[in-house]
Length: 343
Figure 1 (cartoon, helix red, strand yellow):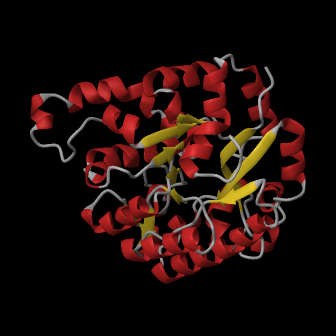
Figure 2 (cartoon, helix red, strand yellow):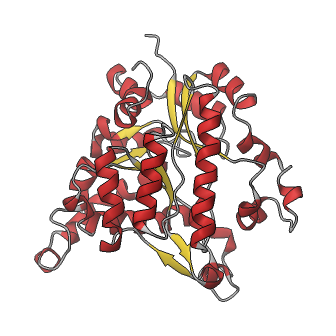
């Protein structure tokens, strides 16, 4: 049976004319103190390209549509609130302009500064209502304070104004990993002597899964039950730990004191969806389908950090029932993000 092309929803971009903010992260893949050097790095060029090689590869491999988002760490890496807000506004304006050049193939997810919940809500509202974006992507915690030594997570009551706006606008929030910052990467910090652990192989899912567990257990989804959060890389490992997490979270001593009404699996069935971005494991996907249900699993690539060719070659060979493959490959994303394309 012939399938329509995939819809890929965790696909990164950057504006080369506004790239200085990326210098700390870029130093990990293009060591240099000169932004003019890393802006010419091959990965930077792939991030910046939308309408040329990216689109050609999409056509060649069978990707119908991409949701684009500012590459990590985005606004979350900026500890200065004013600079982070300005970056969000500029990035969203730029991305909306790029999407407008080819809206049948591309959509956008908003970048947001999370220093202040009300300001984040206002920028999300602008991005959705005025710029036509389909949700937001947040790169884990918000760096704050001198030398980025502080972290803000979004599970506390100070962020209720943000989640209230997410629910009102009825758009998903994609939670994405980021590199550590501040004291964590100093010589005596958590990753200082363990820099080989930094990045997608280990650190990304360890750090972001903490944040997702915190959101689920905080009561956020009880207060705002229609909020939808998307987590990449097959759920940052959480689906494979759900039985054990709930086994302990449901014990009487925990139930008596926990902030949330329900256990983790409940929220993964009602508020969390997962994607295949950068985790092209057929066995892993099948486990997630069994654990969470086909409606909660979506396709993504993680381009350009992973290639369109590798993702599509894997996906074409995945042996799933036709109805499941259509749901995961495109229909769930179209429904969840309300994308303007045919299912």
